[in-house]
Every structure is written in structure tokens, then in C-alpha cells.
Length: 336
Length: 228
Image 1: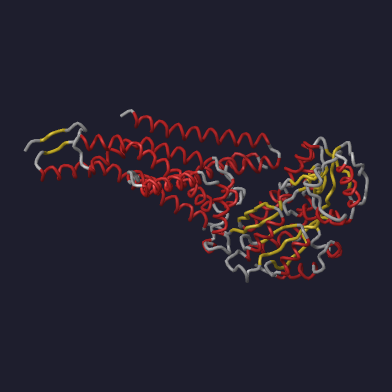
Image 2 (image 1 turned 45 degrees about the horizontal axis):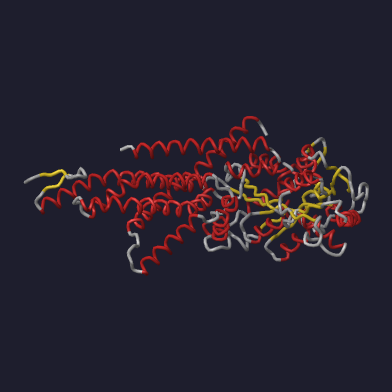
């Protein structure tokens, strides 16, 4: 038998039978390294999948969808850790616009929501996807604008009139208004004020109306850059004031600018796989004496950002929660 | 925020980025390299119009999927995993697993495409020479793979780059939940929204450093391989 090493460095025997054998042995040896590599890779992958699965199943999780303004104010980063350590529950907070939060509740992607748009809240309760709507706290919206105030709205106590003047001066090219344009609670209120004047502006005909489709923080900074008017909740304003040298509060106090927040649980009949018990625990705690006191104690720049109203039944009723007393009684009676 | 948890949070965010993108690329390699190699070997050539047509269509489809907008992938995955969606019963929405799956879908076409291209371009020259020098089909195939391993490594580098810098898709499917589904890129979004630009830039610097370190490692492997 003659052995030959060919130009490719492969050993070849010259007889046909041994030729086949030699090649497959060589190939197998080389394959071994490759197969080892694939095996290691597969083990790593299986290990990672197992780890992910293990991490996900470890503790009780409650998913809360809330609005960007609530989240950006810092209130939840202040409140939630206290709840988490007290009840050994992990709360996952997703901050989106009110409209999206409500959609997420309707789709059963979250366990409860904390939002601020009466119209949308009533809708979801009527649809039975949301249950036990209860008032938690409120703050005020304010109209902010450039220090120079070209529309001359400073000191007005009528928000609708302020918007009218902004539009008038805007049409003359001397003012700009920035809208959240994201179905957030702030946006919904802004739209309701424009509707009182007839119709909602659009950049096509009113070049001074900018639709940002962004969170409150982003819109505030935009307004600062463009020296524009916008509607914001006071809590976020206070949180961001330091970054907004070109702006100040111009209009406040109108009853329409009251901004109440509600908690709504996701109906367990619709989505039995959700953590209803956990959601109940969290909601109950937020409207409890302890939760309400903590909300009242949350300050920025020395000012309270949110006024608790869960246990002030008269105030709650006035702010659009006619069933407040009954709902709070119900929550108090629950023992999740 | 308490000082001691500041660095804890950065560590949490960084580790999550590595975990999500790393796992996606690992699994993607396991799926994509074999498929890409197979497609690279079976190049549809020849003078027949039909073969040419299939070849062009295949390449176009793969190239399109390579450039798939990550945010669109995120949207589709969201609709699949939403409670009332077809895979809702898995309860995977707003978890790191959903983010890994999102990035996996983005990464696999990249690995397939680049591997296919690498194997294909090597194949012509090496295969023909090997056959001319007396190798069998099987031996030639093995040699092609060996030569193409630089290209295969390139596909991994490209895939990791795409994954670690991705933000839109994982925001939709992960929810950017603090301590749970917040990665370096999505944390930059939050910090920018809040106006904490220093923090956002710091996170960006960390992201770049990590990307550089990993690419350095992969490139060293790649270059060492080429030296043989």
C-alpha cells in the first residue's frame, strides 16, 4: 500500500477501499472539533434559556401601567419601593400615555393602571375590562409659556380664554403652542379645551400648533427651546423647572384644569391569568392612610406635587368620583 | 436615589444589555450559521433562467430581512405575545425573554446573510481548486467551511453590533421597566426624557466601551484565524 500526501495536506491511500476509509476517519477527527464547538454552544444556549425561565418564575410580580407625567414626576420611584419591601412583591412600572395604558389594560397586558383622563376611564369601566375605579390624588394643570408672554395670557383664570388668545396671536405668527399629541391625560384635557373654542388646531392650517407625540419632559424641553406655550401638570413642571429658564407659569386655577388620578384594576374575569391579588394589594395600599400620607409627603422644590383625595369623599365626588365612598369601603373590606 | 443603589442600577442595566444581546446572538449563531452555510453551498447558479431567478429572489429576501427595522420586529412580537394574542398564554410580554426573542429575529437574518455570502464567495475558488487537485466533494466542502470561518465570524460581529445598539424593538416588547427590562439603550431614552443628560451620556460611554471590548475580542479571534 502506498500512502500519499496530496497538495492539500490530506493523506490519501492509493487503493480504492482504503482510500474511502482514510478519508472518512480524517473527516471524523476534524468534525470532532466542530461538533465539540456546537455542543458547547448548545449547552450555553440551554443554560441561558433555563436561567431566563428561572428568573421569571422567582417572585410575585404586579404590572402597573401609568402615565409619563406620573412617572416623570418621580412619585412612583418614591412610593413603590416602600410597598415592595413591605409586601415582598415586585412591581413592574410601565410608563406610557394614559391612552396607551388604558389600551394595555383592555388587552390584559397589565394588572392595574394609574391614569388621569375621566373620559377614557369611564369608557374602560363601562366596557367592564376595568373595575373598581377609585380616585387616588389630584394636582392641577397649568398653562406655561415664554417669559415674554406674547399672547398676554398671564394671570387669566379662564383657560379657554387663554387658549383663544394663544390661537389669535399664533395666527399672527407671534406664538407657538406645543401639544403632547399622544393620547395622554394631558393631551385629552388640552383637546377638550380646544373643542370648547370650536375645533382642534392642526399644523396644516395653523402653523403655530406643533404636535410632538412625546412625553411631558420632552415637550417641556421643546417648549423651552422654542419659547412656546404648552399645557402641563404642575408636578412635572416643578420637577423640570430647573431646566426651563425660558418658561413660567402663566395661567392656573381654572376648574377645568383640575387633574385627578384614578386607579383601575384589570377585570380578572376577562384575564384570569393576571395577578389580580397583587394588583388589589397595591391599590389597597395606595389608597390606605399610609399610602395617602406618603403621597402628601412627596415634595419637589418644597411644594407638594400631588394632593391625596382617596379618603376625602366630598372632594373626590367633586373631582368626578361619585362612587368614591362605596369603592373605598369595598377596597377596605378586601383581604388579598 | 441612595448612592449605593446608583452603581447597582448601572450594573443591573449593563448586565441586562449583555444578557439580552449575548443570548440572542448565541442562539442566532446556532440557527443562522448552519442555514447560511447550507444556502451558501447550494448556490443557484447556471445558465438556466429559473435558477438565476431563484438565486436573485433568495438573495433579495435575505437582504430585506437583514435590514428589517427592529422597531417593526418589536411591534410584531408585541402583537404575538400580548395577552389576547396567539402566544399570549406564554405570559412573556414585558420580560427579558421577550426582548431576547425580538433581538433573535433581528439577528438571525444577518447571520444567515453574511455567512451565506462568505461561504459562497469562498466556495467558488477553493472548491474548484480542491476538486482539481483530487479532493472528493466531501473534502472540498470541509475546506470551504474552514476558509469561510473568517466570514462567519464577521456575521457574529455584525449581529452583536446590531443587537447591542438596538432600542426600539426591545422598548416595545420589554416595556423599559426599571430594574427588570431596562438596558443601556432604553435607559438612555429614559434619562434623556428626564433631562439627565450627563447620566445619558455616561450610559452611552459604557455602551460604547462594552461594544468595543467585545468587538476587539471577536476581531482578535478572527485575525488569528486568518493567519493560519
